[in-house]
Length: 76
Image (cartoon, rainbow, N blue to C red; front, side, top):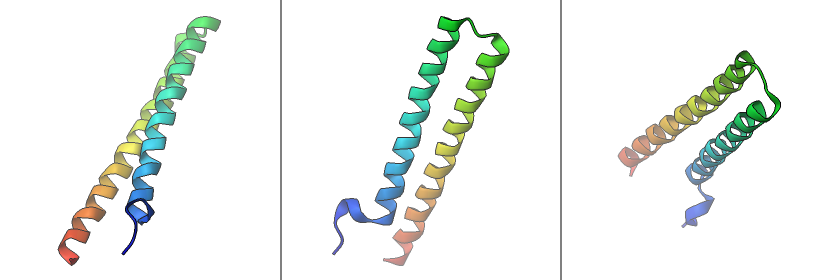
């Protein structure tokens, strides 16, 4: 019997959580830096798009993890 946190799916879930948290923190830092240093709207939009890509990637990974768990339910 495997431990709860040692499964492949558990590690994938932890990775998704780190991607979400890291993207959120980096986005907040970029927002702060943009206002502090007076970056142009174009530069700020670049960081917004990068954050959107990070959140989209995390959503995709979450969907893949959900599908894998649904497939495992049918095997048992």
